[in-house]
Image (cartoon, rainbow, N blue to C red; front, side, top):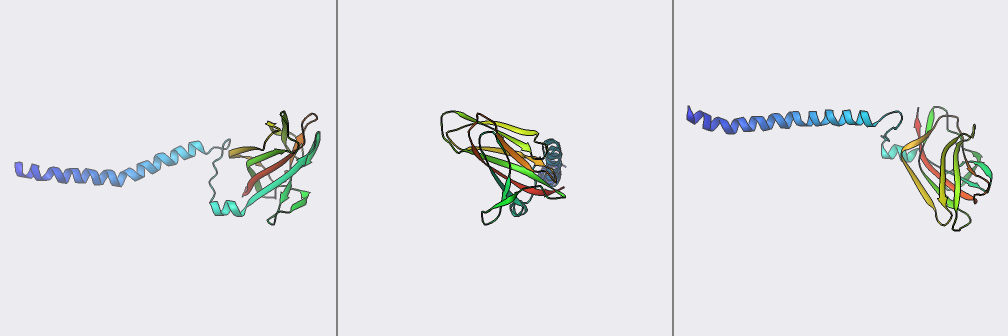
Length: 174
């Protein structure tokens, strides 16, 4: 009897280790999936698109706003040319802004004020105070979403200096 228990102990440990190995990844997978569902909400969507697909659907927009001017953003095509018409989010898609670069056209020690708006309603989506001395880059890991048909505008209000605004993002199916 003692011989059996001496030899069965290593087998018992091996069986327990095998059981944990087989069930462990499923448990870890289940916990990870639950955490992802909690983190990926409508209010804060996770960017979960294949890198190649996101790159093929990436969009660059640009505008120059002088002091007190409202401008709609225009798309920059693949060769780097600015399309003359204002960019509108295509039907059946959403445009997700991932970063914005604001470059003052006149340097100085002050600050510039820049509004990012829904182009049609001119409702303010974002408002930034940026230094006139350097380019400011803003990143939005969860993205700022504009829906199908919307245009996007910028405003440098009176008293602010003129600025160049570059908006980077991607299109995604609704």
